[in-house]
Image (cartoon, rainbow, N blue to C red; front, side, top):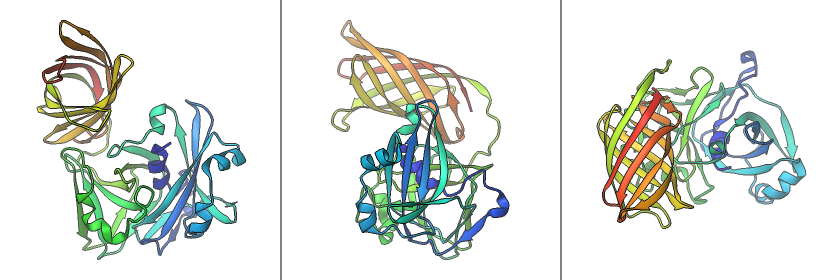
Length: 353
């Protein structure tokens, strides 16, 4: 359900609403809000409905803290309910097509989005990975405001639209200028604060907004992409690399290394777990003009004093030159010594980018 925190925090307009009904709501800078997200149905036909307090109330603490997600799911006949908040907006205003409202235990919330949930991956949340949400609203900042941004490899820029008090209840607006010191940014990413010389409008592209979250569940929307949208070509992927295990989080395997091949020359970082005879995890590839994020499932065997991985990987998203990259199953071979210090890997298949 954690990924729905990102999708919910991003949604403020129903894409199906007529453009003529769009209205502008101001006074949002540092305004507190909350969301209730209902999950209904079964995969691959599940959906999440997002209800938001925007323009209706400021999410009173006593009212919000009285909710129990399990009890609310039973009351609503939903598969599950996620309580997403409190959060604080950072823009000054939003132009959107308002949805209908309903009463939730004495406070009104507005229906702002319905999100299709097709796979288990749609319910997982990984910091610094793209999620696309269909919507039409436009965020607007006044000249002179300070904005807080993530700059991804290749020059893509994401602007923070809301900060969260879910993981850190003490987080305040004044703390955002130095937030970068707290974040565990992926290789090649950086955080910055800058003061606007003119107005800023952040809008979806063709009805789709691309968002990411950091590990504190602060939410950012893609504001500038180095690569223009367009049809991606099917290309051969052939990558070779070398890796070694390094200290990581307890219970996790972390490898770093270098890669060469059809995507270019770069570095890799892979994190996951070993259980039931397989490695399951995620990886990031960093190049001078962009980066790639993916997932891998690699069954392994041990023979001749070495560990042998044979499995598949999928390329999920990218930044810079690789924005829009996707793939089906790529074939992965990885052979390493038992101490994890001498990995030799190869990846073969096709991707669109």
